[in-house]
Length: 559
Image 1 (cartoon, helix red, strand yellow):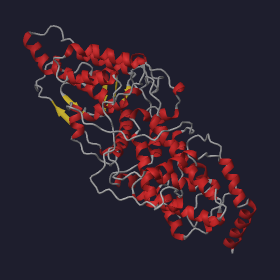
Image 2 (image 1 turned 60 degrees about the vertical axis):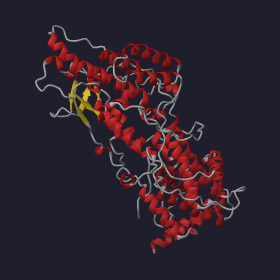
Image 3 (image 1 turned 180 degrees about the vertical axis):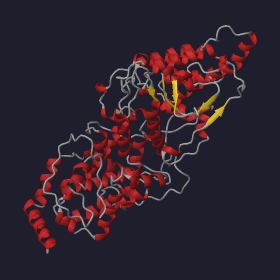
Image 4 (image 1 turned 90 degrees about the vertical axis):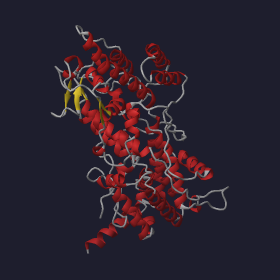
């Protein structure tokens, strides 16, 4: 018998739950009371929040190609998207033609403020903010992986304004004193020009791809300040493009619209009923329901931005987020909650809420049926939809559906479950086994990493991983030499890259507005009254019958 799904055993339980008189009665693959406790609101378990926002189903973000490629852009666009684990993320290097007999004035200025992972001096382990920014814009080589990690995670260790001022210092760095005319010429050609080019490209990439500042008037003032500082530097390559990007930001335009690119495949014809005016759940084809649920889920998943996954921001309300702390004044007691008023995490929270509401809808539909035959038909339909979601690699919706079937009010309907055919129960057991939390969801992770895009992952595993990293790894080294723990940011960025790789490819599916409207209307109307649902469950199948049935099972098994 496979172990049932057990998400989030270590996280606090804030939602009232009714779990009593639960007995294993699910054809060999039955969730136990522990399972009942933690499959209710599965994403809420990982996120540590209650569903208290009203999501709007978004349009998918569209990813537009930039007019020209910076160093980082070029390497990104020449790195194949992969669904493989983060440990397989390729590190790309670009080495500038620097004199092998480099003079001291061509060396790094803050190399004593960074610590490398090993003697090869390729991967940064920790460093001061000045040391890390120098690595970000160093003149002798380009480390795309480091630059991506820095820009993906910078709000966890420096506010945007301070980062810009340090970059501005790099842009305007003076030559070392006492250089001869020959040495000054070498320094200008081999270091200053390259550093300035690097800084402009980093600013471009930051403002295009990784801009995480909130849309406030203060941010507009900040952008105007950046524009004023950059405008005199029109002689620096690509500077005019940077100014254009800033101007678009000032106008409130989204420079880089993200979207999930559909693969080059045939679009299947929708499987619609003849009567589209009065849709009924049982009349709809389970594959088409899975497709339309997948379109809805993919739109929500496409909304998730890197900033929403930092500092456990999905657990915080706007008033909970502390003001930014300049890195220069931060001590080891100042943890990673140093963001500059990160905007509300609508993408992650909307996904969490949708998952909870979908699980609620499953339960409410079944409990609304007085006739056992209809309840059995609904269970079969839901299991088939979940199985079709699995075939579409939509693990997020699949998890929500099987979690809805595992809630206490549904699980305890033993007479109903005995009428569910063995094939349906086997399908459900297989999906439970796939999403089992055993060995940190090893079966699901293997399935995900082996899946061909498009794919919608179960967000809960990522939120769990990010929580472990945030709580278990220090953000800074201890005094007296306090440095930013950059290796922690590498682990976070690896997860963000995997999320982005799943976002990069969309589904070739045709929306059916009538079916989508039917789904959205019913899902958003699901109340999630756990106690009310349990009372309804007791009314359908009283506890006395359940107890008598349990005693019969015990007597039978003891013979």
